Image 1 (cartoon, rainbow, N blue to C red):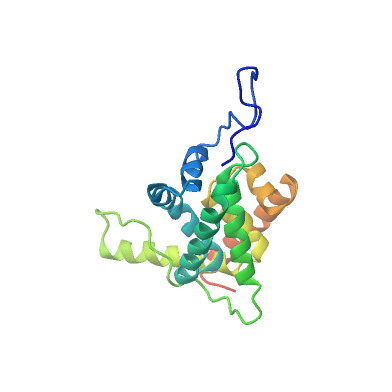
Image 2: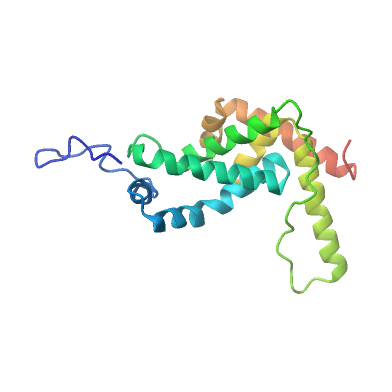
Length: 201
């Protein structure tokens, strides 16, 4: 990561020297080729990257491939990362979204319903029947999510599952906040209707 050119005894403040991105120091170490920095980056980002890719693609194996490619791009980008120009988390989300969208647009790809969604953590006090019901509900939600139009699914995943703000989710999708709210409203209506019907349309 390049050193700020205006740093020096006479500079009072520089936007590149005072970033609030919590990943800046880690990226700097990664850019210097520190193996431990690569391990820390994966440990810090992998769960959210996998969750985002799996909810968009519906397939664990594909999500893992997207995650691997995303980290490869991060390692290549790290030596050129410019502190203060963008938040790394935002950049990484954009990379994952682009890779997922490329796969969803692939000519021969048949987007199957998600059947390998990991179940939620089991309640140790629940009965076997409750475990089954909970797992079945998780699977139905995953299938309903996979059946949404891509832009609606993307909006819902970013806002509800990745817990981004509306402004951040809209910026990642390249839409206005009003357009994002419209996508979210349509996605919620579709999910409610699908789940109320007891299955997919």
